[in-house]
Amino acid sequence: MKCIDAFPPAELKGKRVLVRSDFNVPMNANGEVGDIFRLKRGWETIKYLSQKGAKVIVISHIGRDPEESLEPVARALKKFGPVVYISDIVGSAAKSAVSAMRDGEILLLENLRRDPREKKNDVSFARELASLAEIFVSDAFAVSHRADASLVGIPKFLPSYAGLLLRDEVVQLTAALHPPRPSLAIVGGAKFETKDPVIRSFLSAYDHVCVVGAIANDCLKGKGFPVGRSRISEHAPAREVCENPHLIVPTDVTAERLDKQAFVKKPQDVLPEDKIVDIGPDTVATLAPYISEAKFITWNGPTGIFEEGYTSYTHAIAELIANRVSRGSMHSVIGGGDTIAALKNSGIPEEKLGFFSTGGGAMLEFLLKGTLPGIEALG
Image (cartoon, rainbow, N blue to C red):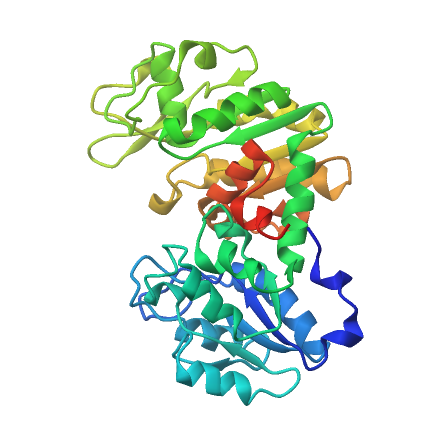
């Protein structure tokens, strides 16, 4: 995989460069971008190309509804630099705008998923997208586990490179595949069946693996503890996973009653009407020595239901990690949209927490397989 910064910079001037970014960002109730994390990270490649004099054509998707528009994203990107939004993808408006571009200009085309051929990896759509440019740059790590036309189809028609974001993701996550010891993985989220292969892989590669979030409920239930009305997965974890000596499960939990009052309890004290919403302080204390000794930590998934306000223990773990990272005694890789969102209001600067991955599912799939379809397509 070649990165675009290996391309002779002087030869970028005047070149039409198609950049597949991932600007699938959350929106506020007023229809504006609610979080610029991905925009900030993705802008670095766009800025690099623009400063070298390339004509930069940015493509992305947004949301689950094909009718959603990238126009609010264009408005948000203007905080970083001049961007022209075109409400078209491969039609006459897009082609005319591209042909009129000057060196260094940046266009953002409309939501790729407005064309059903994108999700179908239709070769004709990939060819039409490729016809807009002379070079392709893939920078959308967070969706590189998808085999969409803009990710795996375009490289068949254009010289293709990784963007700066994609390059950094691969470097950082490759290091996480074989971490220095001692090492710790923290895995949260829901649907144990989707996390099971990753947890099993981590149990082989890492010294300890701590489960948090809803999947911790599955492990607690597998160990014979009551979980009340807590969220559990359709498929229970296997006994060899629950009883693995390297697996760490919560030693206490925050349980919410029907009246929304929450109390910290030992797992055996969870009542039928209780809903587990987070870990507790004893679990943080249990993790503290592992964090203080670790040379490498991979973390994907907040400890509790962050969208309901249960973030205090996620923040407590982040503070322990930041203390080590800021002293240069440990490296960490943190990913997952919910994790990043939960840490946003922690008050801890991003640079003190290590590397923030833009991927959630893509991060976990890369850590399981060591590659992704969108990366393989680059050769």
